[in-house]
Amino acid sequence: MNMQSKTVLAITFLSVIFSQTPAQAQEQNRERPGPPPAFSSIDVNGDGEVDFDEFSQQELPHGDHQTIFNEIDSDNNGVISKTEFKNHRPSAKKKR
Image (cartoon, rainbow, N blue to C red; front, top):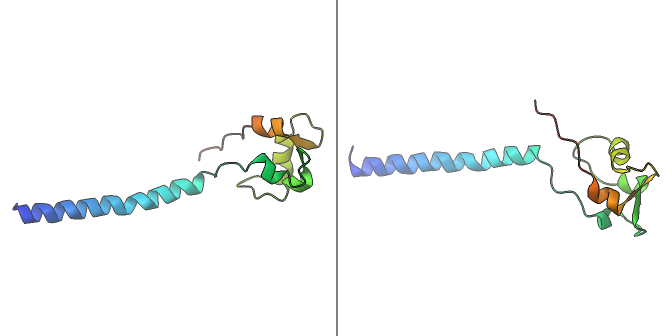
């Protein structure tokens, strides 16, 4: 195999590798939700607590608002404090 053939083969190989990388990264990003919003962006009225009305305005990657709200509201007082929000760890998504 001459040098020109090796160069063409190497360029073709690298093109195939790099063309697949963005597609694979995009697929992984669809499965992974973004970072949670800041507490202050959810606490619309700025009172230091998030009630269900404020929480229900948020877009969720999965689950329904009431279930997620109840999980975060660990003391079940009907509002999410900054501490509850900070300490909440979403349950792991089951792998298929």
